[in-house]
Amino acid sequence: MTGPVNLASKLALFSEHWSPKIVTGFNGNDVMVVKAKGEFNWHSHPETDDFFLVLKGRLTIKLRDGDVVLGPGEMYVVPKGVEHCPVAEEETHLLIIEPAGTPNTGDPATAVTKVQV
Image 1 (tube, rainbow, N blue to C red):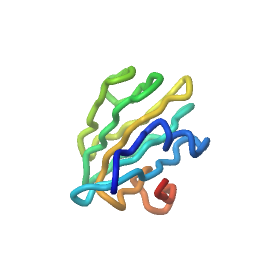
Image 2: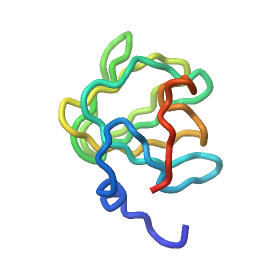
Image 3: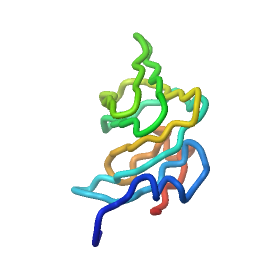
């Protein structure tokens, strides 16, 4: 990385929902932006926590024991192994950080291939 990363500019480069785009990396982690709309799928990550930071919009993270609702500037970390289902009623922009190679669905067979933007 040779300079600052403008997240709004990176988000303007794509329109797909639930398709994380890598903007940079650090210490073996991918830093990604994603546009979310509608309901994702119930899943868990057995080996890693799941970090969500809302940049724009609102995100509900459904958990088996209750929901977490996030607005702009709010973040939540789903502990590893905890089943969850992100939902965005309106288009929502997120910053996500996870170890490089972590499948977004928790299953490599159904995961979206992540690309750099």
